[in-house]
Length: 265
Image (cartoon, rainbow, N blue to C red):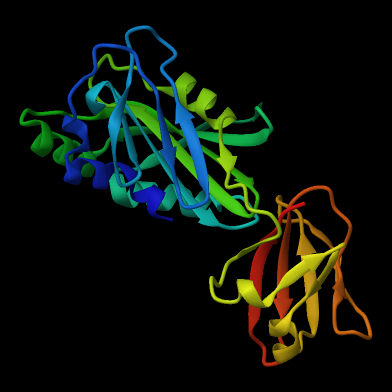
C-alpha cells in the first residue's frame, strides 16, 4: 500500500516546507471513492491547504504530519507486513508498543503505536528538505487502520521537530468524517464491466454473467466474514444473501478467473 511509504515521499516532494497558516483552518481531501475532513482541534493549529501524494501536513509539516491511503480490501492489513514496510521506508528498527481498538463515529478503528531509537532515512530526508539538521530519535508514532465498504484505510501520524505534538486528536476526529462515494448498486473493481451487470430486488444479473458462466458467487461483509453464497435460478440470475449493509462479492467464472466488487444497499 502506498500509504506505508508515507513519510519518505513527503520529504522528497517538499511537503514539509509548506508555509505555516496563522489562522486555524481545516481541509477536506477527496480520493477516488472517499472524502475526509481534517479540522484543527487547537486554536493555534491548522492543516495545510496543499496535499502532496498521501501527505497531509499540519503547521507547515514541521511540527506534526499525517498520511492517508486507501486500497481495495475486505480485511484489516496484516500488522507484521505493515510494520516491516514502515521500518523499510523510514529506516531503523520499529518496536510495537501499545495497541487499541476504538469506535470513531460509525467505524471500528484499530491503532498501533510504534517506538524507535532512530529513523535515519526519514531524518536525512527531512534535513535535506528543511535545510537544517533534524534527527528523529527516541520517539514514537501511531498508525490507525480500518476497513469499510470494501476498502482498507491506513492513517499514520507523528511529530517531526522536538517538542512537536503528533496530531492524534485531529486524525481521530477526521476519521469520524470519512465518507465513501455515494454510488448505488455496484462499485466495480475491474472497472470494465459495470455496464454489463445489474442488481434488482436482491438479484444479480447481466450480460457478463451470461458470457462467463459463474460457478459460484460468494458474499462477505466489510470485515471480511463470509455471509453466504448466491443461488442461481432458471433465468440465469443469482439471488444474493440479504443484507442491510454493504457486501463484497466475489464471482468465480468457469474459466477460473474471478471478479470482485462492492454492492451498496
